View (spheres, one colour):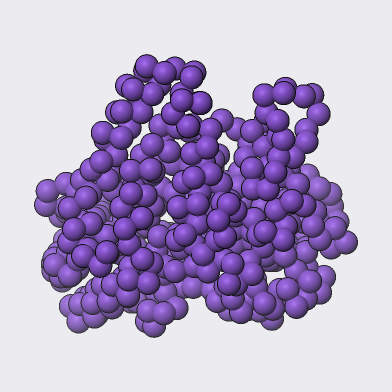
Amino acid sequence: MTDFAATKAMFDLPEGMIYLDGNSLGPLPKTAKARVASMIENEWGQMLITGWNKAGWMQQPLSIGDRIGRLIGAEPGHVVMGDTLSIKVYQAVASALELNPTRRVVLSDNGNFPSDLYIVQGLLKSLGADFELRVVDPEDVAAHITEDLAVLMLTEVDYRTGRMHDMKALTELAHAKGVMTVWDLAHSAGAVPVDLAGCQADFAVGCSYKYLNSGPGGPAFIYVAPRHVDAARPALSGWLGHEAPFAFDLDYRPGTGIERMRVGTPPMIQLAALDASMEIWDQVEMADVRAKSIALCDRFIAGIEASCPELTLASPRDGTTRGSQVSFAFEEGYAAMQAVIARGVIGDFRAPDIMRFGFTPLYIDDADVDGAVAIIADVMNNRLWDRPEYKIRAAVT
């Protein structure tokens, strides 16, 4: 499907709102309400514990994983849903380290989402003082891929600016040096075409509540390449990753293939919401989504630069090197964003000065872009942001 007017009608978007924050939390698919209600009433309500068998709950993390796998270029049977992105980052990096046992260094960059760095810091501290996390500037990553590295861990799309790493080139360079790769696709899945198999990525992880619209706290996914999937040992050896969960053995034996990366009981209500969203995603091709996304972002950049000279583009100008988001820097960016939000254009702010806007063609169109530009220009040109109430920081920015 390339009729994005049809997909826009499939989302529950509040009247009078232009929603440019799907890169942080995707909107509600209209069918999700009925799908979740049915799961609660007809499955949980009527089947109770038998729903694990009768409603196929146990297999949903794998079946939905395959549907997401199509969007990220994964081989069938190599993506599974469950747990949080933090847990999946921990699993992936720990497994990658064990597959490269003679090395002790993880390389990342300072454009990575801080939580990924925190998780690796904690993991390496547990493993011992001889393990090291190196953090460099994004543009210097290639130069720091050396033969002492165990793992290269990167987020493909920078959460602040939308700058993209070249997954294929960096993975090839890492493999030439004997380095394992872990890619965080939090801002890639559903935003840009990804080719995990073609790039020969080793591990990948991502969340489902941004572009994939599973709702706040929706489950994460993990990918393990076929060549590693039967050797990778999950550091978090949960009961659903066991070879026979209901044998209740006291000793862990890893399950077959990607199932070993399961940890705890899957969140079935949230997976029901994700299933509704995937019914929309099943109808589109990422190449079509990407082409429209670049056009929307370019239109937005041109409009803002023509009308808001105070704002400085912080994202790559070349759409092919940018994710599905656009960021502008402004010293009073927090206050300006609050003023924009108050007028019905929803974006967000990232410290220290980034006004961030996400573009999802499934529900954003040219008219939304033009309407947002007009409102932002009014806020900036008339200094509507310069009010005390817009400068009070909320808990979530």
